Length: 388
Image 1 (cartoon, rainbow, N blue to C red):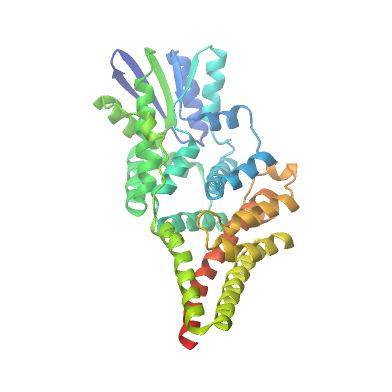
Image 2 (image 1 turned 180 degrees about the vertical axis):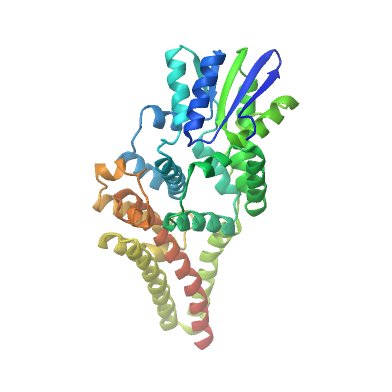
C-alpha cells in the first residue's frame, strides 16, 4: 500500500495531507496518530459547514426543511444526497465504523489539544447543484439508475475492498473510468474540489497544517499546491443555470400545443377543439396521477397531480410533482421517526415507507408521468387534426 501521509513544503509552511478511506478504522487511527505526533497549528478537514454540523451536532431534518426542499425545487439533489449518505452508512455498518469517523476523531482531538480547525471543502449542496447543471439528461438518468439499482443489490462489502481505495493508483484508475463515463461528475466532484481545498490551504497563514482528506483527493491537491496555482473560490461556488435541450423542449411544448389547438379551431371548429383539449387533459393528468399512485401517494395527492399536470406541462416554471409533493406533505405530514430514519434507509421498501422520502418519490414519479403524458398527448392531438 502506498503512503497515506504526504508531506509538502509550501512557502515556509509544512502541509501534511492525510488520505483516508472515509469509512475505515485504520483511517481513524491514522488521523489520531498524525495529529498527536505532529501537533499542528491547524487541522483542515474535508468538510463544509453543513456536514460539520451533521457530524458534530447530529443535526436532524425537520418539517420546515423538507417544505423548503420542495419549494426551492431541490428534490433531486436532496434525494441524491440521501442515497450517497445511506450507501456510505451501509458500508460503515458492514465494517462497524461510523461514516466520517476519521473527521469526528480529528475534531475531537483538536478540541482536546486546543488546536484550530478549518473547514476547507465546498458546500455539498453547491457541488451537487453544479454537477446537476452540467449533466445532460442521459447522464442524470444513468446516475439515478445506478443509485436506485444499488439499493436493491446486496453486494458484500469487506475491509479489503475499502482499504483498496487508499491505493492511489487504483483510485486514479477509478477516476479515469468515471471521467470517461460521466465527465461532468468527475470534474465537479473531484477536480473542482481539489482546486477549492488546495486554495483554502494556500490561504492559511499557519506554519504547520494537517489536512484530513479523502484518499482520492491527495494526488490532485498535492499537484496543485506544488504548482503554486491559485484559484478564485467564489467562481467555484457560482451557480449558473444551463439551458439544456430538455429546458428548450419545455418552452417549446406550450407553443406547439397552442398552435395545434388554434389550428384545430380554425380548420375544424369547436367540436375538434374540445376533443383535443379533453385528450390533452386526460392523457397528461392520468399518467401523472398514475405516477403518484406508484409512489403510494395519498388520494389527495393523486387528484392534485391529475388536475395540475395538464396545466403545469404548459408552464416550464412549475411542475406537477411540486403540486403533488406539497399536497402529500400537507395531508400526510411526516412523523418525527421519519426524519430520524432518513439516514437509515437500507432498501427500496424503506424509501417507499418513510414519510419524507415518499414525498420525494411522489414528486419524481408525478413529474415522470406528466412528461410521458406530454410526449404522448402532443402527437396524439396532432393526429386528430389529420383525421379531422
